[in-house]
Image (cartoon, rainbow, N blue to C red; front, top):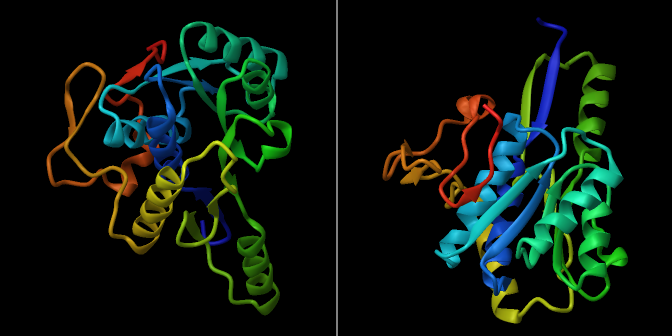
Amino acid sequence: APNFGGYNAKWHEGGYLAGTLAGKTTKSNVIGLVAAYPVPDVMWYLNALVLGARSVNPKATVNVVFVNSWYDPGKEREAAIALINQGADVMTHFTDTAAVVTAAEERGVWSISFHSDMGYLAPKDYLTGVTHHWGAFYTRVAREVVAGTWKGGLFLGGLREGVIKMAPFGPGVSSEAAALVRAREKDIASGRLNVFTGPIKDQHGKVRVAAGAVYPQADLGKMDWFAQGVTGSTGK
């Protein structure tokens, strides 16, 4: 409708960078992800995470557990510990608390936060975080409404728009890994690197994006499959 506007973030851009760093860091080749629900937004992050990891470490896998809640510190902590017990030595999450980061720190496991910089909670084993910044967008929309120039539409922002930013690197990140992540961050922001460029297969070996093709942005809201290298199930 003319008076309706929606907005979302390109979680996958941060996810790819997080995966790149996780893939360079892991020794067990198992990355753990505690996620809320198997909805498309989460799938963007999950699939980008494994694509980034396997781009630098083809043996890397992502083991995911869905806790079926956006905010449940107890379940998130339990899932994180379970994944660590299964061999994950880098942990990340798509949930709304710091439970995964604090559990990883207690167990001496690397962590990558989501939503905000949680480095202060994990001074030893924090790698970075995928942080989200909506202030500039809210301000612009508010000014357009006041000026009478606002028009409905969908806003999808990422690294280029400043909606997605990577938190400062922790002390355990090597200079080589940091340089690689920064270089890829620039490539994604400039449009030189598209996270979902084929060939991409799902966990069953089916080609989802052909070689040289790019997964359409308009289809992100339909993403309901796991990329190759993901261990877990959507329950479907």
